[in-house]
Image (spheres, helix red, strand yellow):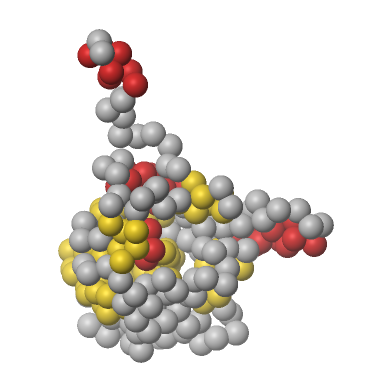
Length: 245
Ligand SMILES: [Ca+2]
């Protein structure tokens, strides 16, 4: 075969569109032949930095730290807090043991530390562990949800579980999925997506507006709930924003 033609048939493109699950258009599909191994396991989170966070204090800054939440974690471990900044560099590694990787959603929440009074949440993002490749660190910039703006850069490694036999393009797809498809949403935007979803359900239409987390299969941490496939805070439950570093 003419080598130039071959290149046309097998392009070295890294940034093709992620392949989505046809049943759930907001969910990244598992590549053909890939297999999820392990039912429990160790998740390593390298929490690198925050970018363009919202200001929670009167000085127009925050004192941000991250808290990791999952259903099987009794106390969410936290990073140290960084004083008076909207672009913190944490550079900390937190490893957690997950009891059921096929069911548990991990939530990483950014919180403003206050020496007096209650700490304030300033956004979170949620991870579906069944999409992670086994033993490979994936670095993503995660858009924060439930807040006007803010991003967190994080390296995630499924140490002893995850997808095996993935094609080399999968990591690029995963990163693009996290950054472009799973964009940060404000509470208001999610509320309207959820009501649209409810309308679809009541009219018997397909679940086309279902969010990225499959209902009935995945479970968020205590204090959160799934609505229309999106992770939201359960306002009826008390959540601790305490700093335990
Ligand atoms: Ca503060």
